[in-house]
Structures are given as C-alpha cells and as structure tokens.
Length: 279
Image (cartoon, rainbow, N blue to C red; front, top):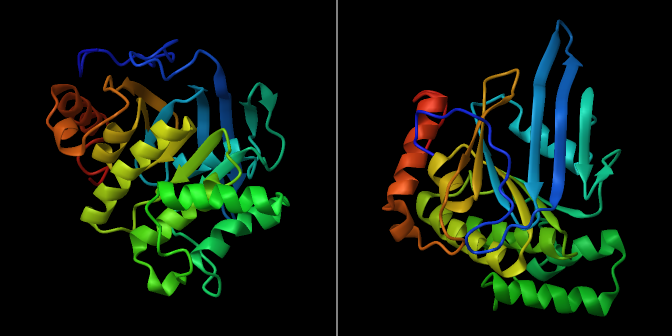
C-alpha cells in the first residue's frame, strides 16, 4: 500500500509472512450499528461497522474521542447489544456476556486488600476454576510478566506499570482466546508505557492470543498491531484499515525507525487530523 493513495477498507489476509495469522475469523462484526436515547436526543454511536479479526491477530483501533471505540469492545464482550447487525465469536452470535474473553481496562481496578497473586486469582474464583490449575497458571503468568518477588505485594506497593501487569495476568488467567484491551496504558508515564508495549508484544507472541486494542496513541497502535482500524468521528464507522507489514517480533527502537512504521503513522495522522488524536 502506498500511504495517502488507497483508502479501501481491506479484508484480512489469509496469512502473515511469519505465519501467525490463520484464515479463521475469531471475531466477526457485520454491519453493526449502536443507537441510544439520552434525555434530550437520539444518539448514533456506531454505524455500518464491519470487521473480521483472524485467529492470533493483533488489531488496534484508533479514532477521535467519542467515536465508539470502547463501544465496539463492549459489543464483542457481550456487555452491550447492537441496535443492528451481528457480532460473532468463533462463529457464534454474541447475545450476552462472554466467558471466553479477557478484558483489560485503562485502570487496573485491583482490590486494595488483596495481594497481587490474590487479585490475579480473583478471576479463578469468579469462574470456579480448579484451585491447583489456577495457582499453576497464575505462577506462569507472574513469571511471564516479570512480577516474581511481588506476588504478595498489595496494590499500593506496586507502580502503575506493575498494577497493569497484575490486571493483564488476571485477564489471561483462564487462557481466553480473545483479549480486549481498552486504553490499558493510557494513564502510565511515557517510559513505563514503552516498557509495557514491549511486554505486551512479547506476551502476545508467546500466548498466540487474538487481541483487540483501543488506544489514542498512533505510535502504540502501529508498534503493536498487525492492522490498525481507523474510525471516523461520531457516528463512528471504519474509515480505513491499515496493514502495518512488520514482523511479529518488534524491537522498540528499531521498529520506530523503519520506513513502513513511519509511513503508517504519518498516514493515520493524516486520516485523523492533527487535532483528533494524541500521541
């Protein structure tokens, strides 16, 4: 793709160069609209949104505030019902809250009276997972995310980045095939956010989880994702889908200097306008 010339919404390719992406659509969003009524008026949050996300794919969603990015995640999670169209997970229509997804929010939302390990295991308690299985999985995730030595620390003893690692472990405890992330690093300082981006890339590669990430950061989207979905102002619809074309394993500094990365970020800024997205 030549940036600035082709504005066609692209269908997901069958494979990636490194073979991560399969040709099975794990998430299918077909002609979705979301409308609701406020006290004074009718509001259309989303209109005519269609998107397929393949198994093992990382898709980032960017767009101006209020364009329906978070609403789209809630539809996939079954926390919100579409006014029109269909949302499917593994070919099954989403009709209510799903147990086969993980969800990470902007705030870690940890329970202050529980240690890091016990916050992670809260997921197991809610899902009634066998105790030994849950504890073993928690230990694996604690090691994977570099939380060794902080298992018994309470939230107030952890940095913002470490709290988000705990939240990520909690979301991954039941090994969900789909991970939804709603601006998970938006409240972190720049250096911690960069470290968490590298950590998330590594975890994604190691787990093979399908990820949908909402972010306001164009560079974050292009660093992490296979494809970036660019949305219009409300009523939100898909303006364009950008193939990033980078290998799955990405060194942060090296990736930022690659021509395809610079082209993609520049093109997306042009689509959104300088005042529409922060970076």
